[in-house]
Image 1 (tube, rainbow, N blue to C red):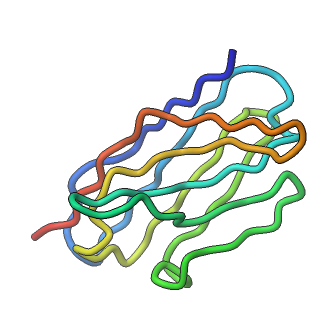
Image 2 (cartoon, rainbow, N blue to C red):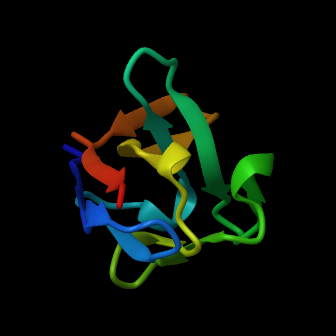
Length: 117
């Protein structure tokens, strides 16, 4: 059974940095794409960044140049380095593990990120 556990969230001042981590259990981690989503109060969950099994990345426009997604297949970990944080980055951040064939997806429980002075 796959489990995803996020960590690294917290309270940070505008302009600060945080590094989120997501630890995966189960086998075949390297065959899955990984992504970070976020959901702010009253808003829909949105894709922040994704990384394919081959290492290709994509980002939502609002975080390009500030956030970096990476993965370590040997450790079954995915990371989100967040720099130059803004108050509008405040949200619960979720890790997602997924693939299209066979169709499978798994979610973590989320970690709170609050950007405030």
